[in-house]
Image (cartoon, rainbow, N blue to C red; front, top):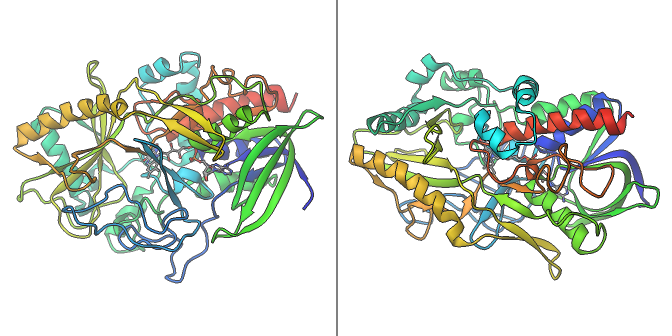
Length: 502
Ligand code: FAD
């Protein structure tokens, strides 16, 4: 296996990577995408590509002997997680002290496992976090482009009011209303038309079959059904799976040399590969991209990388919590895995919160409402390189989650008081009402305008770019993938015009 060469290489296949590959391919640039996870297109023995949340198997998680679901227990019982065979499954939970991070693994990255909520941030929040980016242009050109490319759609409000699978959302809306809080519909990339046909019994069920964090077999326009087929359709893109990039160095001619390891789905090493390229785009996500660059700086491979690499990481203020409703307020035995409504308290300057009304698709009545609250937080972590393990380790103190807990608690205390309801303490382990030790929205580590220039060009290293969530400084106030996609659209347009086609 000698070194191969590709004019452009994109590491990862998530949002930033998929946008970048499509635009490079459309410009005629031969591009190789390297993805450590699998291509999820082959049915397993049960006829489905993905397993469900209620009976997870080896397909669920990335090399684990037991699943690690966000809800640890039910009624304090260990009934949720299952023993599994280690395998290149689709969801990973990366452990750090005081803060675990969930990420998707596979062609499509986080789009394979996420809730599909496709939210454009408030313009004021966007302008605050990235003051160097022309917000006018973003809201005029790139947010619309991202929404179109992702296939974002809205739920039919009339159908929503009658659908059994959104009873949980209507119950949560009513208890919010009693406390004086408003709600807003949340756009999604799940095809709401397909969901209505599931509800009518016309098509195989996916959102209505407890599918979400371990993948959706139908209905969801994940990146492998939107940007990535479009990229492949240019004829200039190749995707190599089960291939993890481990190091980056500079080549004498000016390009980059990558060392990667290819495995089989059970983890045996198939080959160690060396790949040369002229243009290198990092789309390995906040954790993956930050780790690759921190490792390159600390091992001396790319010694001039900025001290800003590894800084300004945040969890987007993620806090999960759950309430028990009264027995006369059932939340439904069949719950759509795709949220469609959020408590929208973003306009409060003192305590802005956007709380997604999440499903608890247990398959039986629970009377529970589950929420993913996105709170505003100024707490940021940073990464340190551990030479013994070769890993980037997140530094995040337990106290750094507490402002977000206080913010969510202020909102849900008021809802509980107004409705005479209580928190559930049995779901997140340690008798906690607020899950403050994991997140779904890792952001930052290689922040735009600090570790890179204003378009994701890594400072100090020509033709090296960052395209993913690591560009966003730790918080965006809503679910992040639309922002990641739109920013990638903006940056790659400039980079192709000024650097690649020059
Ligand atoms: P990612 O999508 O994380 O893609 C990175 C890719 O790079 C992955 O495929 C990974 O396997 C690969 N990779 C990493 N390192 C390497 C390496 N060294 N070599 C090769 N490949 C590598 N956001 C929303 O907006 N709405 C939601 O409803 C929502 N729900 C979520 C639910 C869950 C359970 C999770 C986990 C996330 C959710 N998110 C949601 C967050 C969203 O999915 C992420 O913000 C988004 O995927 C980040 O995009 P990205 O381009 O930064 O990287």
